[in-house]
Amino acid sequence: MNDSIYEQIQEAADYLRLELTAQEMATIALEQELSEEGIRAVAAVLEHLKDKKRQQIVSTLLRMSRLPLREPKSFENFDFDRLHGKQVDTLKELPTLSALYAHKNLALIGPPGVGKTHLAMAYGRECCERGLKCYFLKATELNQRLAEARKYGREASVINGLVKPSCLIIDEVGRCVFDVETTRMFFDVIDRRYNKEGPNLMIFTSNKSADKWSEFFSEDSSLLCALDRIFDDATIYMIKGNSYRGRNRKTIALTAGESTSLIKKES
Picture 1 (cartoon, rainbow, N blue to C red):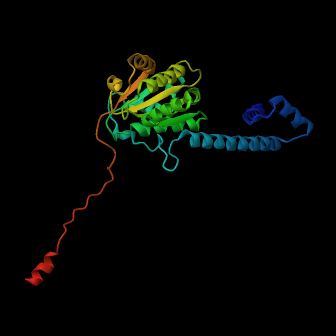
Picture 2 (picture 1 turned 90 degrees about the vertical axis):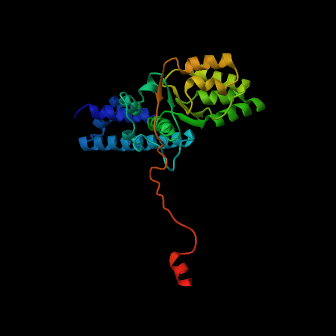
Picture 3 (picture 1 turned 180 degrees about the horizontal axis):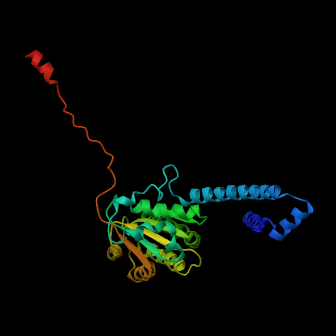
């Protein structure tokens, strides 16, 4: 029998946190005089339990991510054919999550309706599918959360929570203005994530180019430091074009008033 079946059993056992090595399984097989079919049945059961646990983990990660579950945004249901350009293939490589492992932040910038948020959510969903934590929130929600944390003395707890996920998505930068204190807290999040080990990136979406972000933050020195760390080694996608929204819209023209036939009868 190929030794790989025992390695497969050990791999599944490790995932399930069971103390069962390939050698131990081989010893059990000899002692119990298990046939090849019997050993493969054990491997199949462990593989089933492994897949079941993986699905549970993914389900939990998606639920905690704040990504949409009823109508999920994924790379599979994004229309990449609508995007054109010499470097469009770079965008199509997003599902590999190479930016996450290379610690390269992403910024998706462009007008409303071109797919920025969809792509950001799809990236986050892919992270969850691979067992990595993701967290999504809009810039307005981040601003409010930081302000409330300061008000109730929960700064450390809230900042820690924003540092933990492998992928942190901040949507619609430029929809609100951060005051001096929330800007400094925002910098703390950026600074700590900048030095975070393991798979790690932040994704930003905005209608405004990065050189205009200073209009929405109130502390110049902190902002400059934060922006340095955001874009130190980042990829910025500038997306132009018309909105996706309304592409399936149907327009029906109607006229209000008495019908022409009724007017003729009365005359």
